Length: 165
Image 1 (cartoon, rainbow, N blue to C red):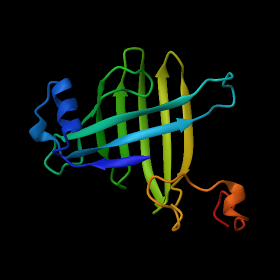
Image 2: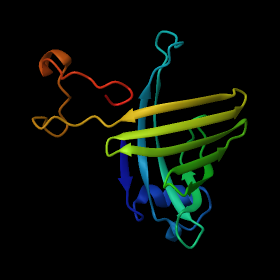
Image 3: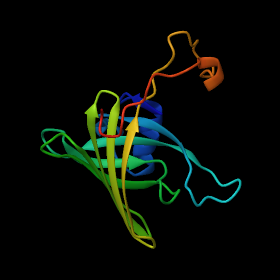
């Protein structure tokens, strides 16, 4: 889940102060929540968390600058990195942690499809490519109500292949 935060959100001001940056430079940010699993997970192991990101541009067009986080993905301590929009409007995030470096690129294949590539170098060297889809809310779903189970939702339409047909 990604929630956009406006520049004067108090959570962003706190992150700027944590990183000894002027909150007036913030242009916005987001709160991100994640939940995942890996094929090699042990019983009870989870990959869940959330982080708040703040952006402070340092170029005249606002396409590059500081990326401030209240916690990192690879390490849970607060971390500062950089962001840059490339010539195809892909978002590049670069972060150096105490024991590793990560580089991620996000782009959009459609309004509900995000492509993410990432590399991590350091204690563990990994590369990944992910296709992430936004799941639509049910029109019948009340705010705060859980999504229906598969049995409650009934049969689903045929799925498209990974290549879109």
